[in-house]
Image 1 (cartoon, rainbow, N blue to C red):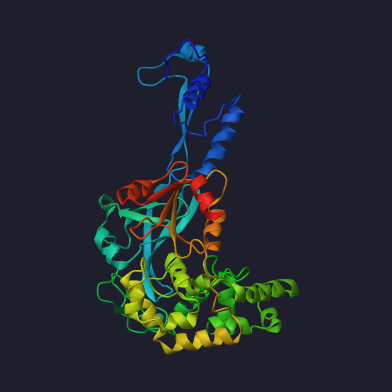
Image 2: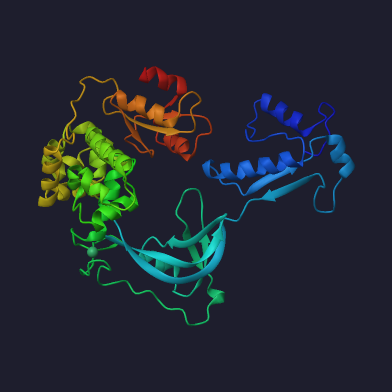
Length: 436
Ligand SMILES: [Zn+2]
């Protein structure tokens, strides 16, 4: 671009002309007046970095005037009128001090890297995920190793690899625990699964996760019921399962450290409000293995109540278009378990909405949609709500069972896949006609 075209005297003019001619120009390009402006811009962009759907590692700052560019000239390697500003690195190396074991919502034992604290992309990291024990083995990660740690987007920091050249010979292998670190029950490994699990349904670690999951934003969305509050409720033995949340009294909560009249009321109000949540959120909140947001929506569109769902057998569930066999199996197992049926009975008794009157003849009943790219007049949540109001379902990935792919600006790989599968691809206007 260093050619000084007769028609343009600045780089910015040229960019704008390209844009007008129909070329795709990055919308984040900006013209600033001085070095203060450059600094402010770089700081702003670094913050924005996490929200972009593509990776960037910095910005290029250029002198705008072609005349000035010419006067500055270039060295043998680089122009003197352009320079790059690099953001804080998203990878760092540090020592892996230990591998701890965490017990998750479904009892899965997960190895967690305990690191010598290190800055990664401007944040101090002292723990990172190692996903599962097979991965630790596959990557050959040893306790005491120097490791490469990476952060990207909102993702939890992860250990990329060990730096083998830095080994002293004193590093040790992490042995897969034979017992749950929390309740000491012998662990099991399901056939065909990588994960090692604590099979104790009453393991305190699982209970904590189940409650956190139930209260989470995509499930019953219980405000004010964060991790530390759940810990306190469990420590004080005020709750023993999900349904107990609805039996909490203000006096109980006021006993907890840090709670006052107002905050106790807020917590109770948000627990009470969660009784009215949609059936799909309740299904998701139950934390059935292999049943995520999409599967929960599918189930809620097919069945009008938890009771009806609980009576569906595995074969029937496997027939549901878009629901995997693993999910069908897990749902059948969930409802064949006595404690789960008891839990649902208690939730019903206390007034949690477990059925939904299906509005008959909704125009998009059971139709499945996937978004790719940004819409210009609607946000994703707004567009998703419109689909759900008409009886449709929003999926996150493209598959044969998808009815419509909504094509927005700058679509991703989903667009290519949709074309290959010959799915119906509609633009924003066509989508709006469908939902209004
Ligand atoms: Zn356990």
